[in-house]
Length: 206
Image (cartoon, rainbow, N blue to C red; front, side, top):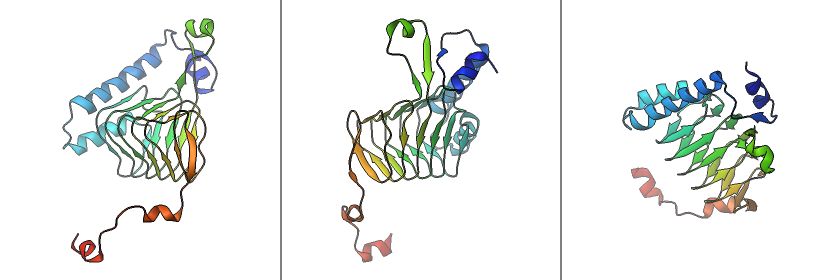
């Protein structure tokens, strides 16, 4: 393992501009697989999509559904659980681990980045950067145009509102929105009554 990768994976600052053939080859492989998935695979060819996801992602559960395009840095650091769904234009910058639980839904234009750069300009301009893992629990819905930043943990049974920038941990069982993202309220049994349910006669016909 290269020294840069060793520092990166341990959570230390590392030189992101270093000439590291191993890491460069891994990134190129991921970009090629994304290109094949996004632009050389028909949406109807679900078998080919699955084969590419098997090679691209570090781990995935049952029934993954990702609508092209998807973009990743390495891919092998991304782990998703059962019934994962992502709408179009998912971006995951994954020099560090991204772990996503079961029954997680992403709307369009979701970005997860584990990569960051120092605030101090002199350090930043030297090419130094960091990578902190992101964890998302089970049964989470992430709205459109959400950005999840390095080091964040989102609990289970959570809704992240559209346009949010998540820069701090979010607990279980809440609706959270805004920039920066904040807890708006708890999710309760009353939320089950919010939407219209078809009459029983209509349900039987479905």
